[in-house]
Amino acid sequence: MPPQKLHTPRRTHPLWWCAAIICSIISIAVIIVGIVIFVGYLIIHPRIPIISVLNAHLNLFEYDMSGILVTQVNIIIRSENDNARAHASFSKLELSLFFDGLEIARLMADHYEVRKNSTLDFNFLATSEPIPLNPEQMKDVDVYLNEDLVRFDLKGSVRASWRVAVLGSAKFRSRLDCQLKFHRSNGTYIPGRCTSKSK
Image (cartoon, rainbow, N blue to C red):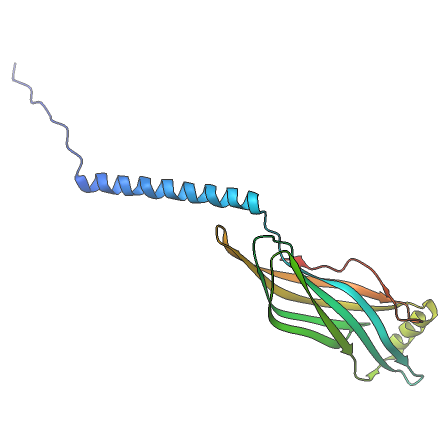
């Protein structure tokens, strides 16, 4: 019977061992970072910065028989940062005020900061140019005057971001779309929910 050859197992090349060790270290590091971010989120629990209508007033609503409307609305927009451990940055605040489908004014602000757990208010005065109304819009205005109720639509968006050392930075785009209602007789604002939603 011929003698059998013994096969000695191949030794793994040292480079493969190095690659395996490096991959293991990277995997462990990724897991640790994920745990830190998750725990940090649970502890800090950051909230998305928002904008909302704090208050408003109908200063002027003049309408003549020829169908020309002139109006002026004072709107206080609040930027709110509920995060206790992070400053918030807001930019490109662009809001449009509509009356019966017609854009009558734009409210804009460029870049500004809101400190931790704080708010910042902007007092916008939206004044329209004389607006020629079509017959259908004139009927709508007559209804508003009879009901002592004037409605405007406020639409737009703002970009917001916050930065936390552990979690890094996060950016959001929030949209505002709501209706503002006023008593025509005294210009008082009828409070309603008007807060941005993130997208």
